[in-house]
Length: 340
Ligand code: MG
Image (cartoon, rainbow, N blue to C red; front, side, top):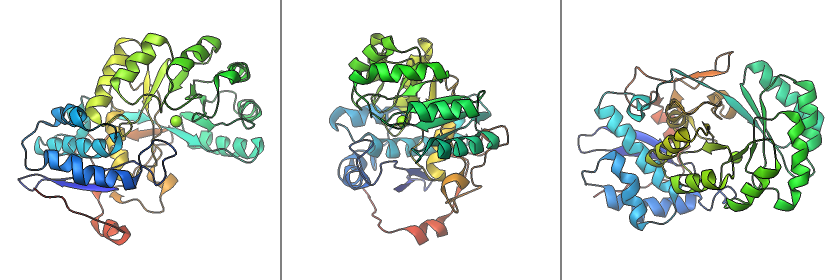
């Protein structure tokens, strides 16, 4: 879902809601984000003069959940502010990097050999981090095969909540492969059992689904439930919340990186800008447009260098890419307008 947000001077910013079609990552979907924006979020903001940094707290006051819907509006307002300030999104966020390292996420494959083939191709393309999705029955032997084929690659595993604390001993078998981290092995809301598991593993745990706010990040740090956080701005309600998590983790020496939600080139622009902040010290899931799209909806399309880097747009005001309106019109299946 794309948003086109216009201010009273007709400055226009495009943003993206990263909710999926089905609630298998978070409870939100496009069909829940739609009424959330139309009925609750937009009416609280349209026609009002509100600082972009105040929107997150304003929305949190009386709308529970719906973080992806909130984020799409909040982040769009950051882009509006950037346009009005004639600054890049990275600049208004306080990002210092000119280039960001890119990692790739590889889905579950039918065999270890098939996974090795895909991992090898990614390594040769220059990706600086290769993430292997794992699930019970397709884990240790799959990771072992990739590690044997690519002894020097920066590898990690992502379990998307597929395990239980009773699997701790099994998961500890991954320790021998020198993984950068194992992402979200246990339940999508859990913070407590991850702490028990982390004590059992040498491999750092990275939390994704469980970290929905800076408060949950603080819980993770206090309990020792993980040593790394994957920040997806959509999951945490937008940029203000992402910056709070960034600053908190930075203070505690916990590295972060930017995850992906299969965004179009519009959502990618927001992630790249966020990943230019100093504590994003690990490669983000920021694959170039060509990995997911026959043709992206932005110009220029997002590209990755042979060294696995994506450039942070810094000399263009706003999100740094032009939206291809004709292409969006061709692809539109549903639209609505919210006005004061
Ligand atoms: Mg994940």
